[in-house]
Length: 403
Ligand code: C5P
Image 1: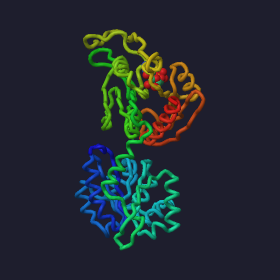
Image 2: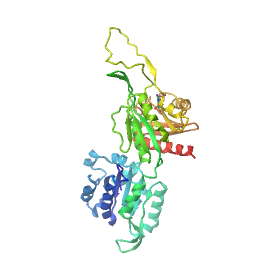
Image 3: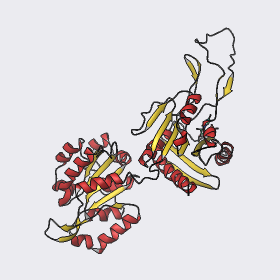
Image 4: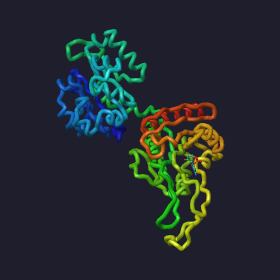
């Protein structure tokens, strides 16, 4: 089973006798290709040693919220952002109660508050504790908030009782963890994403380009993969490492980006144009380096580049659902709306690049998703978090359009 390849699973272990099974669960998740990081509550360490889990996961185990050494490596917020899935197995009655009350009194509850990754709980407790109305209220509340419950199973318990409250077996939990990635909002869809700047050469050593970092497009590619899509990322020159599980095509010029975008477009369901394509390119590229002359002013002659997203949106056959970006400095929504109509797009993501805290080269962004009849504002967040929200929203619009 390699269905968890490159998935980042944060396995939370709380205090219960079933914690000994978490060792086997770690082994199975790793065997399925996942990168597993372990967080243990203090009570969990009474049942199984962190050393065992460190050896099995291949990473130091995270134990405390305010551990300066751990924070210097991967701090609690980074860990919360890192995870594609948080799986808590076993989840004790006490943990469930603290989590449903919104507490952040240890590392694991804090991570659950700070993450935007899906959370799965595998409850494990004595049958009477499971049946207790307070526990039942807590799990009901958590599942209404989108937390997935895996189990519990019914049967003989370590304490001698029989009934509901057994943690599901590690094989079953590993299988269910894999399934969490197969029901994504873009499950089974083919998505093309353009990202980064283009480079338009003047001569063999010079080019015209812009400051686009590619961060937004790369974050979208990662979020789309996490949502179950198969992704082709068509990237201009950037310094980012392509996300794993993405088919990344590197290009330089707008014309190359267009060719890569149209290659296989018949099989593309959703096209997202996040690239900052140069609007113009030098009319011709000098064969040799252009030498400095005596003239004070040098003129460049430029010709218009093809509009990639408008070309895709204008396809008469097998046109994918098409989403563009509009980076504006004033009347952001107004300009975005006219661009939506002019380019024939289904959706446009408008962002205000006059604010230096967001947009182009920064790690954060804040955008408004504009469709012909609606606007949804997504407030400032990291590009990674925003990408997840955008992918969710875009997927909803896409599915509505295919109804
Ligand atoms: O026209 P403007 O550059 O403002 O439009 C931005 C949107 O159009 C972005 O989605 C960008 O990726 C796309 N675009 C394109 N090809 C161009 C210019 C822009 O795909 N030549």
